[in-house]
Length: 238
Image: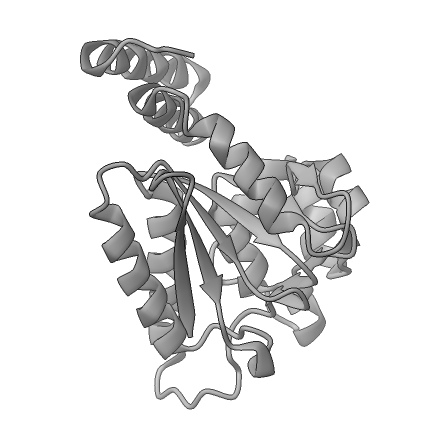
């Protein structure tokens, strides 16, 4: 249910969700396979970037609601661990979105460092229509990416946005020129990132995370610590 392909002279990997008949719904077994794939890739010394994608028709429609589960809390905790793992994964992550990215599928994409989408992509958090709110991290990830006003619009109306609107509000970073081009675009960006200093990239990500969870003064001091750490580990060759 999860395929991996090593690219760019071992510096990037494409990780593909493969449940097309279920629109890549996030079942327990699929998440287990994704965890295993991330474990294997983390052991590759040259790996710099992972590209997470689905099929050309669908990135992921979110939780597998047909999967029998005794405790809904277990499902939520399982997805929380995956979202946190992607957000803190040592390699840069880029979600390459074709078709639908809804609910937990979009939350998975938002946990990635960057997002690329095909022109026909549709992204949304429709949970409000069912009388609930996103429970896999969407209520925290959307304001960090979009700001509170845009986040509330996405959360409270529950309407999907197309790729153009998603780029406009900051939900995605780049739009491919044509359908089926999201992975190629993500790999183009991966090639650029693979040439950057890994300690400097890690420090930048850490400084942003600290800044999002701390008052301004705390964010500034955290940025100083991250900069000193990156200089100790390796000079930036950007």
